[in-house]
Image (tube, rainbow, N blue to C red):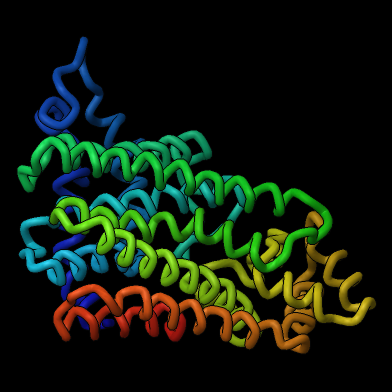
Length: 354
């Protein structure tokens, strides 16, 4: 799967550059957004939109959502190169969500550098993040694959449905972050992930199925695969935050002990609160509630997660979700190569080290 990611990433970035060029001029603005009522400020738009967007994209990111979309397209018997503009949709949506998420969480680092709101200000960051929710809709209206009107409408309605659910997930996450006590269990956490992260995965799969005119049963099967894989990816992200903080702080591209500092109610925290002795529960709760923590306190909280077996519990949960994802596509008539790539991808999201 790593080879597939490496092969397709340059083409993905070229397609994004066609949608949002690094350098903005009047011709692009008029062609893409329509004639101005008076006059566009191309320089201002470039500074406040294109430059921050490409700052984030150039820092890295695996583009796996876009590439998974292309794997599905090829599996459905179509030429992925013909559908590259559509691959930008989930990638831009994902990056938009993390910009807004960083503002909401008060994050300091993203992909190894200061989060965008620390570089360009909260106003610019929020505007860029919000723009990235809407720019992908232009792909649907431009209709580069010349889809019939009913498929255009189905793609648009699907995006609205899944994006609404994404904000349900973010709302749950913010609420738990702001609460002092850990009052949720595993099912609520997984539902949050299914909305916040899983819906972006569902967009990848459902979009590929819709624009290639697959039956409803196939659309639902690949959507289930993508949702489960995305939830496993989120759990893997939570595990990496702990493991890298325990062993190699700074290499993950985020602040050391980021999730603990933010008081996040991750699956590891939920498990530790259920399984630890009362003294450790109280101590972990105190650290999560604090506005600021010392590095020693972060290490103390991480040690509780490690000693309680919460890392291994979360990893087993992710592995089970990955197995369920593979089972979801058993009935889809993919060729052997596509099936291999999809199965490898469920392993990649858990076993990756960054």
